[in-house]
Each structure stands twice: as structure tokens, then as C-alpha cells.
Amino acid sequence: MNAFAHLETPLDEAPLFPVEAPDGRKDLAEIDRQVMFRKYLSNLAPAVMSYANPNAAKRGFKAQHQARKEGLTAGVFDMTCAWGIDASTLPDCDVSVCWIEFKGYDSNGRPGKLSQAQIDWGNAMVRKGHKVACFFSGKSAFDWMASLGAPIRGHVTA
Image (cartoon, rainbow, N blue to C red):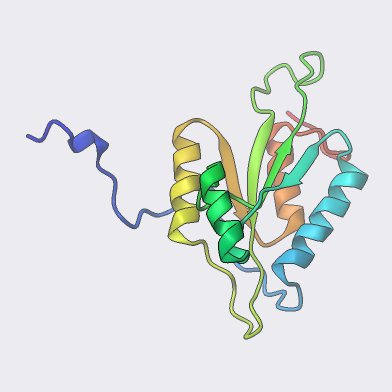
């Protein structure tokens, strides 16, 4: 028996987190989906803080080199969303932050797919007890955040 067998994971592991199927909306690029999601946040969830996570892969060599020095990690999801936990209204909510990856369609109409680095990062976060998910639809992302206890207008937490 190998003493390190419990540390082994497959090289191309499947996602351990929710991944929404493509929605067929080929007219919406990934960036447009993120913009819509942020607009929804400002209108329906003003208590939720959100920010985009930098992606050095889309920058020049010098910026990529600096990002590596700064500790940028491959696969980090597009957005971080955080909210406060109010024990008087959400007594059973122990989640106050989540990470969302958005996917869209490329110019040839093919749906975006998670890279293995994104799957690995997402799975590592799940194993640490954090909430991560991948969506094509901002509404689906909102419903998922509401299920976590995020304060979203029009949603009642159980």
C-alpha cells in the first residue's frame, strides 16, 4: 500500500462544483454576461460587494511576468462576491463569499468551456469548504447566490 495514495488526484479531474450547461444565447459574449450580472447586482443586491479577478493571460508578456511575481494563480474565477452575515435575518447562513466563473460563446458560436486550471482551482476551493460555480446565465448565478444566503431582493432564504 502506498502511504501517499490518499494525496493522489486524477490529472484531468471533473468539476466538483455546479457547472451550468450552455444556454444557447450565442448573441451574448462572456463580457456582456458579466456586465449584465453586475447591473443586476447593483439593482437587486446592493449589499453584495463584487469585483472582477485579474487575468494576466490576456495581457502582454511584461504584465504576465509581473503578475506571476505578485502571485497571480492560474484558473481563478472571474468574479468574487461577498456579503455580510446578519445573525438576526440569516441565522443559519455560514457563507458570505463565493466565486463565479462566467462562460459565453466564441465568434464561431461555440460555448465556452472550463480550462483544466479553472477546474483544478474550483475543486481546490470546494475541498477547502468554499462555494464556487460556473454559469452562462446571470439569473442562474443569482438563484445560486440566493441559495447560499446572499441578500438578493425578491428572494427569501429558508
